[in-house]
Every structure is written in structure tokens, then in C-alpha cells.
Amino acid sequence: MENIIHKLPVQPIALHSKTKSSKTTKSSNQTFSQILDQETSKQTRLTISKHAGIRMSERKISIEQDVWDQIEIKVNEAKRQGVKDSLVLLKNAAMIISAKNNTVVTVMDRQEAGSQIFTKIDGTIILE
Image 1 (cartoon, helix red, strand yellow):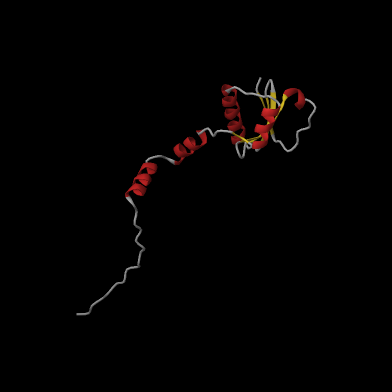
Image 2: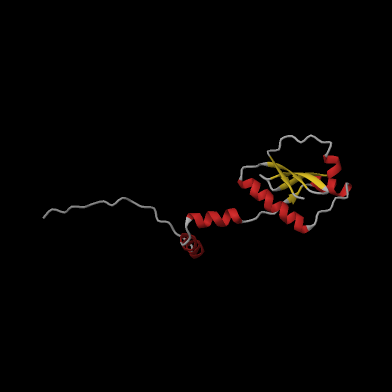
């Protein structure tokens, strides 16, 4: 009797911790489109650069929280449409916001903005 030996290809063994496998199980229950919708619907908060904070303080510009909330919504909407840097015009202020970085770059009062030339922006948001 002849012995035949078949060699099986060697497969690496991957060890998973329990937390990792539960994460995998949890996310595998969701479709890609559900995960994408969740991630894109997350609203990211704006940060104010040091420069913009100084300008707001020097120019005594204050913006109410509900207005900040509206700005964040519109900046995120603009970001989804491909805008990277936007001019945001308010009743009392104008600001340049990097949608790409979610950062307020600079702020000025609305009268000062009337005599400025804004360059390197690819979107404008007007909130009255």
C-alpha cells in the first residue's frame, strides 16, 4: 500500500481580542451606506484660530451660540459641496472659515469687510 501525503498551504493564524471581534460584529451588521450616512451627518465643531480670537476681542465682536450653530451647519453643508475656504457674512461680522480644517481663520466687523478684497475663497455663506 502506497502512502500519499498532501501538504496543505500554511495559513497565518490571526488572533483577535474579544473587544475587536465585537466591534467587527457590530459594524458588520450595518451596511456601508448606513455607516457613510452616520459619518457624514456628524456635525463637526468649529474652532477659532488664535488670530481670529484676537481679532474678535480687539474689535469687540460677539456671536451668539445659536448663530455659531447655524454657521457650523452651513459650513458643513458647504464642505459636502466641495468648498474648502468660505467667506461667512453676518449682520455684524464677516469671517473667513476653512471648511477643510473647520477653523475660523479671521474675523472683522461688517463695515470693515465692506472695503476688503477677499481672495482664495471658493464659497460664500450669508446669514442675515
